[in-house]
Length: 266
Image 1 (cartoon, rainbow, N blue to C red):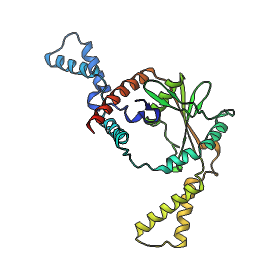
Image 2: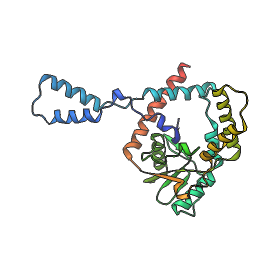
Image 3: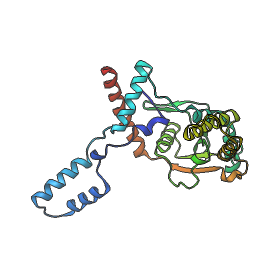
Image 4: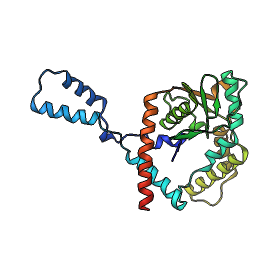
């Protein structure tokens, strides 16, 4: 089974107890540099070597994710997903690409429609440029836009590593874009917020003033016309790492083995 690039982050984490930590690696290097060791130090050295050289294993979180995939595969059971986030991403994709193009200066760009795969992963990068691939993320609201973050989410890091592997590119970019939320999705969110306030305050109806306050607060989180285009795009840059790509292969192999075990047990 080929894993989608977008889901790799769910299986890539290592089980903490099975992986040597940077501190332990420093300790091991110090022991290896010693000319002679006590019996206890020799035992510790061997323990750390075994941990350093241990084969990769799936984390418990990865196993839980694969169990859910197996349930969906065999019985059609799937977690309920908040589809509004996905809906906005799909509906606003073209507009997000145009905003990105304006900010980046890459004016002649077109959404990629080609699907790529190899023996381990599959995916469809949003943009394939001459020197890099670009993945566009439509933020749901102002609250979810990474204004002050300087580190890319792990899930997206592995996603673009897979895209670079599939397209033979050495560079990638993840661009978060603020696009106004479509009116029908905004109205749904507005009704959801009204019901939350009613439930919190234990009332059946809201006053006109309360409804107005809810609207004014919410519209600021979903309409970004007041924000300059160059502030509506946050870009993260990633370089291809062959070590990471080899690790993806290892983890996908383990994930497939565990997936088959789960399927047989269901």
